[in-house]
Image (cartoon, rainbow, N blue to C red; front, side, top):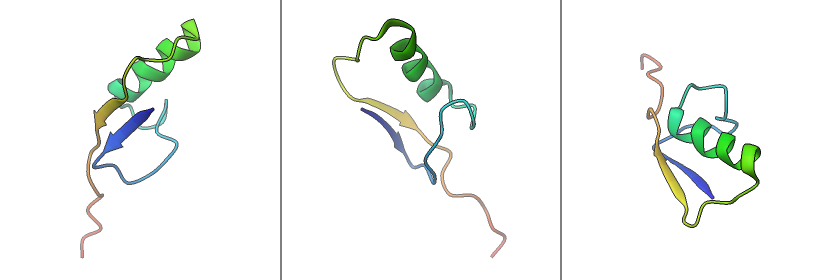
Amino acid sequence: MVVLDDGYSHGVFASQRNSCVDDAVSDYLGTGVVPRHDVHCAGTGLPDLGQ
């Protein structure tokens, strides 16, 4: 499982330029091998909505 800590949305792969997520998913898609352990990636936090 790839976990995005402190993230605010789903569908992160190839859309939010998070190299941790992109690398983990690309490795799986390229090799078919699932990581031995969960992958925890740092998110960017909640967006500033100016409120």
